[in-house]
Length: 270
Image (tube, rainbow, N blue to C red; front, side):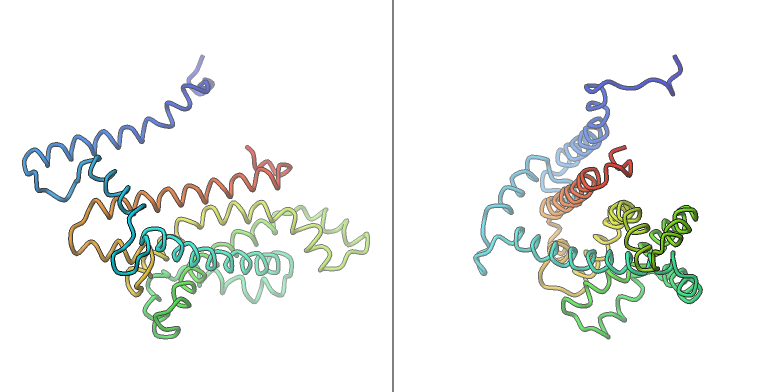
């Protein structure tokens, strides 16, 4: 049997899924052991046991000044910013994606504009956002919105354009208005794509959030990482990086589960 036709069983699939993570952990553990053997005070690659101890401390011990557990407080602040930015971007992408995909006049007016705006590196306009909106919450949320909204609009408008013309014609034959076609024909077919597009946008959204928090913030996961780098506290930095990765994975898993449950007819489970 050809390799292309072979399918791994459940046990082998689970092992193959874990194998890359185990390989990365093994490489890190060996490299850390080599460096610490040569220099026990080396701080670049702390031992895995040190990272575990640091994580336990960060998750449980309150800050002496504020009395708050900083990791949980930073997490709440960052997730609030992320949710607000991604939520507004998703709603904007859905509205403009439907309009551009369905209405020729809107497509002619905004199609090229959105394509050009999507080419602007969002981090390049971060100083402009700080000047225009200040160093508060608005500039950080705006960076996420401006960073992922053009992609969402382009992706969703393309999905609307792929709807068979026969469906649009039949709806008009039955007397449906443009609004009814958008809500009853296009919207149900676009919503599964919206969830998938948001999943793809989470990576860039995290990047923009961490960058904004690192440059101008006094709270948040990105702020804490760039604060402790001055002291070469790699155990703290790695703990935060692993925590952010876990949060991103959890959000992606939640969106995937939502897609499977809400839109099984769209083939989301596949």
